[in-house]
Amino acid sequence: MAKFRSSSFSLFGQRQPARLAEEDSVVVIGLGRFGSALALELMESGTEVLGIDGDEEIVQAHNRLLTHVVRADSTKEDTLRQLSVPEFSSVVVAIGGDIQANILTASLLIKLGIPNIWAKAVSEPHGEILRQLGVKHVIYPEKDMGRRVAHLVRGVMQDYIDIGEDFALVKTAPPREILDKPLSLTKVRTVHGVTVTAYHRAGQGWSYATMETVILEGDIVLVAGQTERVESFSRLP
Image (cartoon, rainbow, N blue to C red; front, side):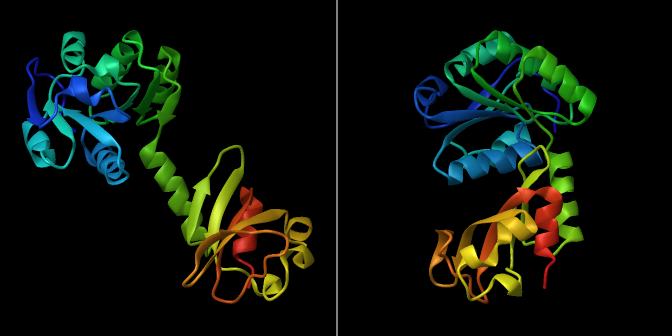
């Protein structure tokens, strides 16, 4: 991630930031690997994005990919005001390579009264500083991904989401013991301490699971529960 040092900025895109801020849109500051992936995913889901980065090449690379992209110094309050950032309700600070710029930017966003601020942290001390500043949503992309992959590698799960406080949601193939009978008869919650919340069947997509649902071979299930229990359930034959 380039460091945000230039006091000038250049704009790319057809719409002015002030106009963009009037709608359900998000500012992403820092278009490195994480920020870029986030911004592009938001665009894919239909959310308009104002991207800000201090590197001209990165900004050029995102031209026409985002609703609006700007080369600017996010540590300058006047610059953020010129870009109408205070008019947005949601801003993500995705700067990772320059911790000072990350913290200064987050501090300015709080000062400007942005109601929803997400900030990337590269370490626990960094995250603690952000929380002390008043950032309510501190994210650790590398740490969270590493933890998620570790769970996937250790088990046979197809996907894993850490909900927090020792609770997880996993996507896995169902064990033989719950096949071909209503979930009410499997006593999954009593025996294994987990809940089958949904299932996927080829040609039908995802459906909510009820006590009357019958899971078939070839289905995929979504299971919720304490981390250790859902991992154990995913390893059942």
